[in-house]
Image (cartoon, rainbow, N blue to C red; front, side, top):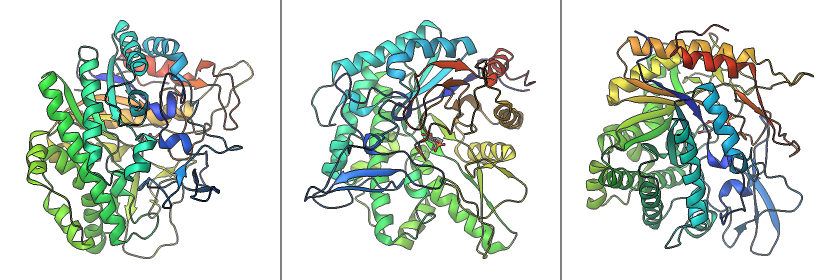
Length: 493
Ligand code: BG6
């Protein structure tokens, strides 16, 4: 059967990693603006000043953005490099980039809106018009080429002011500020955008907890509170979207590091099931079924979590379930209750090494079969149209003397993943789109590096901040163009 007619082929990005223009056009700062670069072995650092005026750097954590100390504030420090400030400068290159996406034949382009470009602190009554116009121009440009935008409303970039005032989604007021922001985008871009995602990788907050370092009951309480307010904000957004335009397609977005039992010891199988409950079902059930599932209650019991879960919340969660389930897929991980010396190390990758798989330079397991497995498992549980909205290989690229970039390794990664999706479709999974991650080189979220590149389009920008931002086509550019033109039939190199 293969890919259905009208399948949405394309690529994905996020404002904080791609857009740049961090202090232009009236934009306010976000947490990524006070986050330095790191590497596979050294974490990104968040920079801040304590109540006595002393500067500090502390490791970034994917689970909690709260200020490290009372009385402190986040700050851009002299002598530090902040890769997201300029990123790869979509802000000034959007026309050129969209023309390149169109040349590849993109049907869909995933991007996010920077909350603090529209609401610089998050609490303004009305949006920053210059920001509103920027995205209108981008969507109009996409429309010119017949490219459907897929817009993430929140991709890791809460305005810094809100984080400092209310902690990391630890206050119900977040819901009202997010609702105001979401209403703006859903009304301003009505007619230009049809596909929306509320929160990117919403499950990271709980999924990583306890994997990198032991997590206490208090850590779980914080994560559950954070998620609850995001679930409510998401459901309000979905409901409001359908009132504004019944044709809007609203999606959740989860990270899917697929997890396998490392051995057939029943204890490993149960531990793996519990890992799926924590990292996927906890969020997926609320966003698709409109309520927490029984496994969420098991987690509440285990960590003594008490939620501020009102009757009004219960109603809105039921009314704001999503139309489609979207996810990122890069790798799988193995879970075991046994001791092992062969652990995987890399950025945001954990568990025991899987002897059947090869690993990327950043320690991510390359597992195309896991994509078929994941698509079937997720579709079986949630029965909504699916999109794989991130997938790809972060790799070192070399620019040859003549300017060409021979990234055959990237093509080798994509071919079996595309076959894996085709197999899932043959197995009756309703997969409607595929947007590869970082279709143009962007700053890595995990490491802040430029040299961890995913793109079909190379951007001349480097870890030390040098580079003229010029764009060039890699070999994979021409290959993906052929894949799209043949609707996934011609995968030859
Ligand atoms: C996902 C994020 O976690 O993975 C993206 O949604 C991110 O923002 C992507 O860039 C790849 O991760 P990394 O660390 O290689 O940039």
